[in-house]
Image 1 (tube, rainbow, N blue to C red):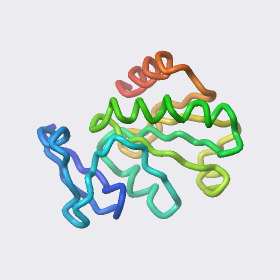
Image 2: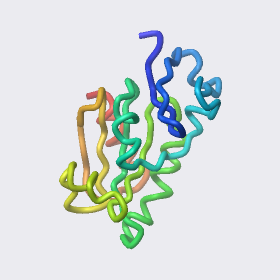
Image 3: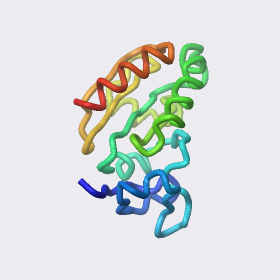
Image 4: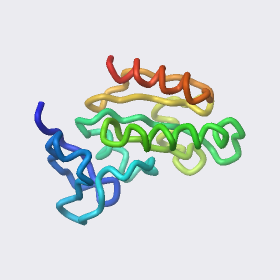
Length: 144
């Protein structure tokens, strides 16, 4: 594979990105925003489908602002997103404001982390993990 298609985190426009451009600060052809800025994207019912259709793996953190483990895990998720920028797209779903998404994926405990490839879930884990354990789990999930 020499290129992949990904959705812009800002306008959801589809972009074909050569693998060689992932680290070159690739921009969206429609809105000119950076496609891979190393920060998790807030997923909503309006943009989730487009983001999941990416050929790039997608990692979703289902969380809520009142959840102490979720708040404590947020820096781990953000650091990992920055370190793996271009290798996977990182999304955050607030289960309080996006209850339909939480119901669709049958979220029963938070934080729940799910990994998708080609729009299909390949792995998930419940609970906040220390960074080393999260990175180890994520690396294993991404090769599935």
